[in-house]
Every structure is written in structure tokens, then in C-alpha cells.
Image (cartoon, rainbow, N blue to C red):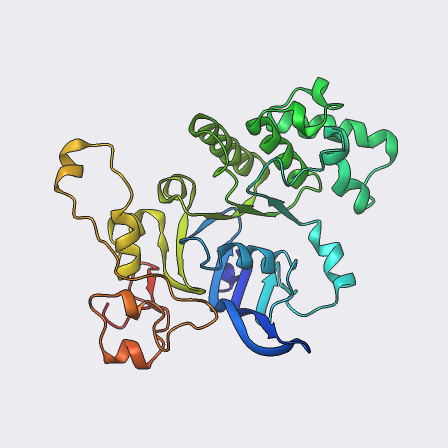
Amino acid sequence: MNVQQNNILLEIRNLKMYFPINKGLLRRKVGDVKAVDDISFNIRKNETLGLVGESGCGKTTTGRCVLRIYKPTSGNIIFNGIDISSIPERQVRPLRRHMGAIFQDPYGSLNPRQTARTIAGMPLKIHGFLKKQELRSRVTELFNLVGLDSSMMDRVPHEFSGGQRQRLGIARALACSPSLIVCDEPISALDVSIQAQIINLLEELQKNLGLTYLFIAHDLSVVQHISDRVAVMYLGRIVEIASSKEIYQNPMHPYTKALLSAVPVPNPVIEKDRVRIILKGEVPSPAHPPIGCHFHPRCDIATQACIDDKPLLRNVGDDHEVACFRV
């Protein structure tokens, strides 16, 4: 048990992130947007945990809480044995060098006025790692790691292609040799052919540098390829967690089944016989989520218990956890 505990790099316990809704001239609080509503999971060292769900379910907010860009409303974020959820910003900053972030928009996340050399080396300057003469050598090393030519160092972002810009973003994330990288939909803005290159690069870097990834995405086929385990999120809550193989072969939560039924299979024989699950209604507002199970208004197998009570994640065998009364 201790060995397993020592192998955990990030542990999230009962994390909540609520954003206040203010109205009127005096900006009085009238409610909360419950972006993340009591979630728990962990990520082991050198593991990739895929966090999937539709837009607005709280995936990105979770990633930003992990990086402490947002200070959570409540709960614990234990990174490498240290609870960073409520400590002051001045204490968080030294820990941030052990974390990196790769963002969705490879152009919007880069300063258009800075050169590639400055962008990749900025974390090193902020954390005061290297002297000026050592900085160029480290940036050259980072460029080589991500497959960029060092002759591109003095270019600005608009002189790079989309894939090259994302490689530059990855170089910046690797600058301080982090142990955890939060990948927030890092390939969704790229062409399909470039997506495969970036995924292969991330896998190669993980193997060579011993990285741990929280991989946030809505493309289930990509998540299946890169993730060791997958957590499915719906309206601020995690509804299912299992290994990548298990969750694709044996989905248990009705929402997970609906998501997987939408993924096209490149086999006309299998695709012809597959049943597409169409969910009824719309996703409720996170400002007014349903009581009980958040998914019950759209679920065909919901019972009165689903309406009255919140289902907790429970282990149903083989490290497979599901939050559903009907499983």
C-alpha cells in the first residue's frame, strides 16, 4: 500500500471550483456556477490520465486548479506530497517549476512580439535557473527535444506553422524540467496529420524524460491512443474512471456509453451494426445543476434514487470506478 501511495504524483480530493454570479448595481452574489463539483482522482508517476467530456463540463477548470491558476473553492490538491490547494501564492510559485502547461491554441498562447528564443526561455528567466550565457545552450537543447531547428530561434510566432508553434509551446512547458504537464486540448486546433506528430512527440518525451500527463480532450479516439487511464466528466463531476482499454471495451456509465457510440469506427462491417445512442435534451446549466445525479434528466435508466441522491464513485473491480446507482 505504501509503495502504491509513493507512486502517486498528484492526488485530487473532493475538489470544488465555484464561480460567483453577481447581479445588480451593488454586484450582490445571487448564486454560483459550479464548474467543478466535488471530484476526486489521482495520477501516478509516468502515467497519462485522459480527462474527457463535452465542452463546458469543467475539464479546463480542473486543469487550471491543478496548476493553481485558480484557487479552488474547497478540496485538496496534493502535488508530490504537498497540499497546494490553499497555500499562499508566494509558496506556490517555487512549486510551479515542477509543472508545465500546453495550451489549446498554439498561437493565442504565445506572445506575438517575442522571439521563439525568448518564449522558450521565459520560464528559466522567471525562476532564475540559468545565467545569461547558459540560457542559449538550454534553449537550443529544448528546440532539439521538440524537433525544431535552432536556426528558428529568432523568428516570431507568426513565422511558424501551427504544428511548429505547438512544438514551441511544448518546449516552453519543458523548460524547467517539470514532472507534471497539464495538456489542455493540445491538438484540437491542429490539422489531423499534424495531430499524430504531436501525439507521437508527447509519447516520446514521456518515455525519455519520465513525464506525467493530465491530458484534457474531447476527442475520445486520441485519448484512447495516448492515455493509460481515462476519467469521464459530466457537468462538473467525474462519472467513470478506468484503464483506457477497460473503458473502451466495457463502458458502464450511460453517459460514457453515449460518448463512445459517437466515435466512428473505421470498419464498415462493424459500423453498419452499431447502435448510436442519442441523448435526449440539453446539458443543464452549471449554475443550476440537477439535484441528485447530474445526468438523470437525460438518462433512460434513471430511477427515483438517481433524482434524490448523488451517486458516489465506487470500485466495481479491476480498478474500474463508476458513479451510477444502476451499475
